[in-house]
Image (cartoon, rainbow, N blue to C red; front, side):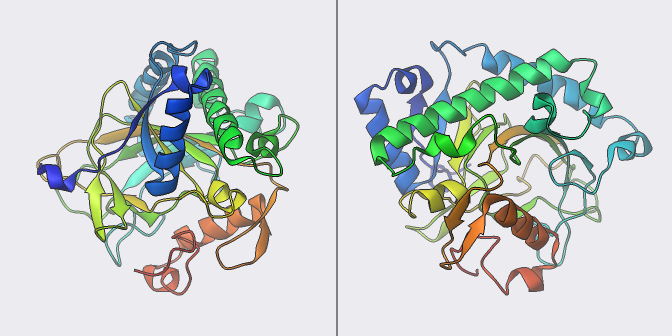
Length: 318
């Protein structure tokens, strides 16, 4: 792959961020303002084992995705934060075609006893998934604490994510379909900004692209084993007064890799449901309302998506 097609993202040390190293804090702020994406290295921190737990959880989910469709569909729910989602249910990255991924979702509220019952697939190895989720949650809150120190907002950003607040924070495990045959089941993941606060992604395969505003082009995010990818979501952008960037991104088939399944896993930190913020269109909405609006647009046909800017976080139509 040509180097000009690859995004140049900052690599940040979580250990240095956690110790509030000023140089690392400055790099964090610049990355969140200019690109909205960065790599995160947990090595040398008190949660360096988090990657091991993430990989263990992903390995368990790879086996689960190989199960028959009828078995997986038993966990299908009319929910965007809980249960199984089959491929081809949302609009995909290719116009007039559906998406090409399936996923299973684990809401954090379920582990806190404030949500629905835990899906059966997670019960046998509950501690693995709990560790993955809780380490991810702690990492994202630490990043928020760093940003609060830097931005000095009227309300600290982490205060919108308190333990006593119900939220849509969710861990998701993804499998993207092989693209070597027909694409009848759908293709990729349509361009969007994430709706929440921060996303903590891990993937060792190509396919993720981020939109580079400076060059009006799509750049691949190079998979770097051992490093997470973190990106800013809409809620954080709005809570920062549009100071931080929730960057457009998408997932596309990669030439030469069409015969492979693509696996990824992401923790989506989201504010408490009743948190209110002002959007790019100058409307005040709750975090829950923004979440629901955005997923309704995800489900809509491309022609309907083009009628508003919710999917792109207010950035504008393409």
